[in-house]
Amino acid sequence: MIEKTVRNIAAELGIRPPKASITDGRRLGCRDMHLMTLEFASKKASVLIFESDLDQLRNSICSDRLEENIRTALTRLDKMVSP
Image (tube, rainbow, N blue to C red; front, side, top):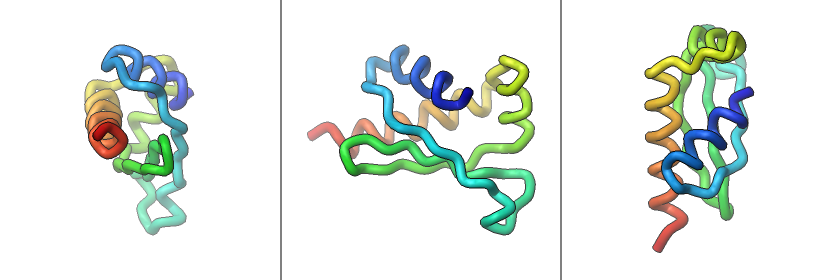
């Protein structure tokens, strides 16, 4: 579900969609946040996302906070990839 959301937001921004992955926050010592990594052309941008935002996304609701975090990571990644 997160990859579809990332693709949609990337399309809105006119950016090629990157590969998105999520690392469970419990593995990192945080139970209510996760690390989302976006990767394109051997470049990576990561952002923390809240468990509650993922719960809402599972119910087809993209919170403003999650959308802003994805936009920020996409913009960072685009700046790294573009000359």
